[in-house]
Length: 189
Image (tube, rainbow, N blue to C red; front, side, top):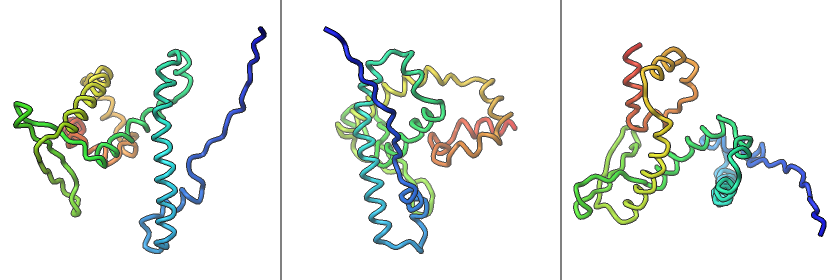
């Protein structure tokens, strides 16, 4: 039996059209028609939903492909983009922190920004969903910790190149953990 290989052309995939991107960029502009904004928001939400649904297939493929092939697929910037997307979803889905000495007295704590841009905190009895989310997040983040050993050399590098990184580090990222690492090294300057 003879094997036949079919080579498929590279598909050019653009998630948002120029018009969708322009409308999204200006969505908070008071001059934008409300109907146009709702329509564009719906398109964007549907495309994001499809992208998220496709992530299961991406994970499946990554789990199966050899490391050498995976290394050719993504750039550092793409990986950092993926990592900075997750906190937005954690916040929107109201992931919480669990505190307590036992399951029975555990509380789920959530920090969120108020309308006046201050941080507020609320607590409620922890539910099973909170424990499952925290456990999965704990497992994943413990894996990432192996890449994140804090060192004086890292502090020194950041301080030396701070201006270069200020635009990259978003306000949302700085608020994670109250921006403690950044605050701890900025006073050394």
